[in-house]
Length: 348
Length: 91
Image (cartoon, rainbow over all chains, first blue to last red; front, top):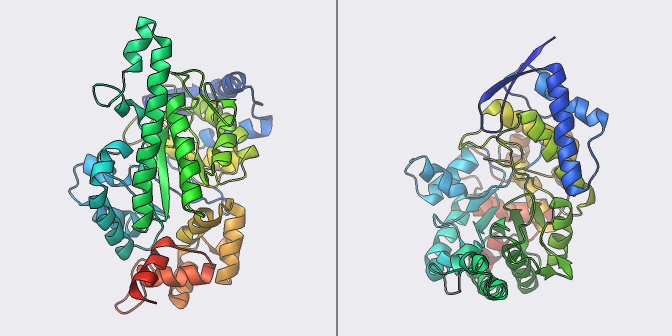
């Protein structure tokens, strides 16, 4: 019987028998189904993922005709992080011309809406210049990052300190105040960048600080799409479910805490989001096949009800990718192929 | 831009089209088969002919804002920076 060489979620190498591979695929989809209260993958889908992992090739691609487009987050930061000293404009030219990117995304090194607000007049001319030297659509991206609104970094009392003191009502009030400020900042910065010519806006890692963070993303989207009819807002999530840090926040009467991707997308569509980027977290203690089966189960449930394009987040630690700055191509290509072909994705 | 990925992405951005619809729409506008959209040879030829911008543009050929003007016209979509360019240039 063949031995399958794969990896754990942390990237370390793992060998499995075919029986162990099948068992991990079944366990992964069952874990997602139980948590999300969604269907498991059917046998044909599990067999498809099995075949993907059984192939001995180092790299594997999608079947012809199944190709999708890619959108990005934090694009200009990737080269800086690797200490390749190019400015953001050149970085995006490299992405377009040398890396074949379908879309481009400009963002600031301090990739949150709050710190960009006072310097947005420096971002606008760069966006105009980027648009003059590129052809692919250019998004402007940043994070709501509600944590920045809590003391000592921000103006409001820190819920993380209030909660352990039993001051729940005060903590919730602090979250609610932070939402209002964050919405103002997101709308202000995004408006400025749209006025500079941006093709679209990305709200990245929405939900990172919990349900208040997600509420800020949804409310900001609603305002922006009313202010700029036709504006594309891509909402990229931070995690696979919304943490109930506040616990009682709702959008359109639906409580946000605890929502998985298949419920998140319903609210995203109501708010006016045009492209949705759901997330499934990678478990570093489980195998790549386990993680892929689990992630595909969650994303399939989301895609089946989506009326807007879904670009699943697949990068370090999400979408079954290993938790590593440079995910190994053997896992990255297998996870991408499974995700695109089973979920019938619109993009990654 | 090696093929037609940016054009398909523009239909998702402009009209929220799902991938199959976006591919069919772009293929129709290019006069190509959907299966041609990922062929870099065929798409380079189509992009040169329709002046949509290519990866290795020759001097004097449409690129960047010029190409985007042509993309907006061909795909019948609004491109924000194109509209602003035209407004600012009095076009």
